[in-house]
Length: 636
Image (cartoon, rainbow, N blue to C red):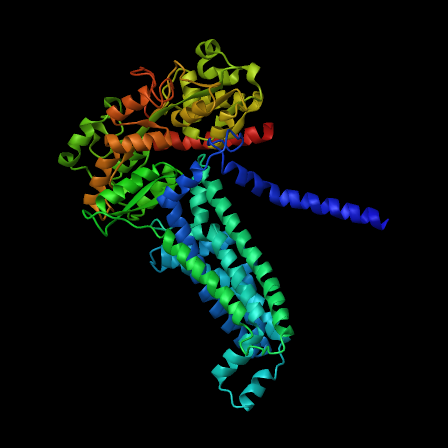
């Protein structure tokens, strides 16, 4: 019976270890994958580690993470320890009251704490950035330090302090030489917990920061929007660092104990009066090591033209080449501070509230809205004429910004169908167009994209209507068209995970953006891209200067550089979306992206359109799409 229980216990332990550590092993293995795929290992490579080290954004985020964690740990440990000691000598009522207050932040949901801190900073007009991020981390770390220190204080003899002062010690000496040495284990435990909590916090950090100040968790969240194996690389290095620290913490005491035992066997051995010397040396070594790492990671910039200046850019995540950032900073001497938004609507809220950015990169319909609400600065045409002359005429002078008076195109593309050539024939696509998403042959084998605009575009185009229609009857028909799909076809509604899923041919069909389709086709030649003859959305993301900009001259410098041949070659190769610079587009279409329809798509198709901003129809579409998702969840 005992043997059976031991076997069962060992089995449960093994399963638990596999459950906890298999994802870490998986992550480490795929950090050496030669392709971007997160599920298919194609060969060994260290290029993602090289890209990680070259990544300005990643290294800067890691630097900020370590600095914030160290400062928050130091401050919260000092404050939390002194507060706990003070409480231990306070009246019972005061002690109970403060302890209840101290427990509240730990039991409170992080999102509530995060929003509360954000509202506090906004109310007192405190600009969010490094200081607010540090204050937020200190605030939620202090309770954990106090929680670790209080049990050690309860173990102390309550008369210890009085005895020390009776023997001639001052209050400060009593604190530093009597009380603190006795509670060192609790203080160290609290400091370690505070460092850990600060290092991996996301929710509170996300709401408490701004002005391009991002810790590692925020950066990883931004990167996870698209396939980027550099996440695996930096995570693997962190796991390695933690493993080394754990080995040191566990092995060093054993080694010291053996050395101590050998010394004690020496008849001439005299005990050292400094009993904490080894521990202090270990702590000091860790602090120095972390300090040197942060110094090494601290980003630097060169150049003279705009040396010491900062350019604040607000753009979608994973939408710019790290090489381009580095080159621009070296050329100008300026520092790029990049904030990322999840949607154009999120970007609009900040701009409408006059948050300061120097360059915005929104989508076409949002540019039209910002122009209409007088939130953008008209471009000085004398400063951008040469740049516009280098661009593909297909992306210039479009309806959302005639004559490009407010914006310069950054990337452009289409929305089409990614399909598995072994399951779907070209003839079927040409015969059915967008209606292929209703073909019973592909039940349970399709992806819809969680974008109300683009999914309603497919329905409206299939029905023969303009995707910019505001006709209620036509919108209602489009809703019925999509409702039929979610009720009968069992689709999976996804966002950016469609990239890796289609690259691994998990389903036959999926709605996809052209740049993502380019990556999918590069990873898997079995996957194709198709634009239905009914027409599609030609989208353009442009660079604008908001009226809240504070560094206009540097903004023009960036816009002109980002649209240049050199920058577009780097940027388009890295991101995969079609370059707006004509020379760069033609060279890439005949070189790296040759043969990919998703990169070099059709020209001048009469039914292809650009989205226009219409608040009434957008509200109706948003409401319909919410209902579609409810129907989809109930159907599945």
